[in-house]
Image (tube, rainbow, N blue to C red; front, top):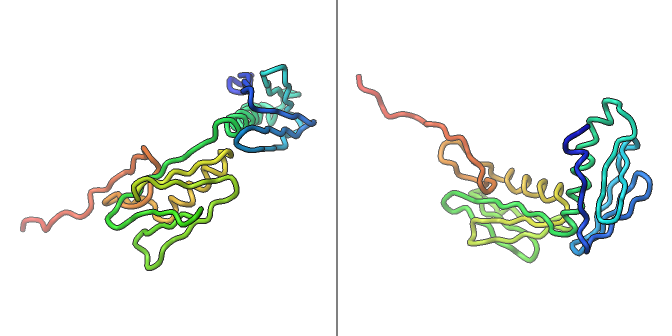
Length: 181
């Protein structure tokens, strides 16, 4: 049995879960998410507890059991609390700003880079160098943060660029000075 797949999911009081065959719909104060699960995975609700089960013991069912449980748990957590991803900008002259809902990045290019948030995503900027991406769908929050980071990934010599908060960037030594003859 999958260690992750057999763990129950606790549904908060403000969240409503609807199971219709292989389709699961989760509604909460932050929004609404739905997902179609594979046919060999089933979800059962008993009061405030959701349990994800597999219908057979095939290899594919065992592989998908923990994944589907995590996806459903992320849906429940997202519509009740939401997710956020923090990014740090390092480098002289590199900064971020908000223009309406859009994020505008000055990253040393000849033009500003403008990022339009997808539905359900909000940007926040703290002190020109910290960007916070928030939303209720963990997948979209992560993808949007990855798109922002891809504008100028951290380079290995000085570490300039956009990085996730807490990300360790491997640094290289660079060139050495002129050696003795």
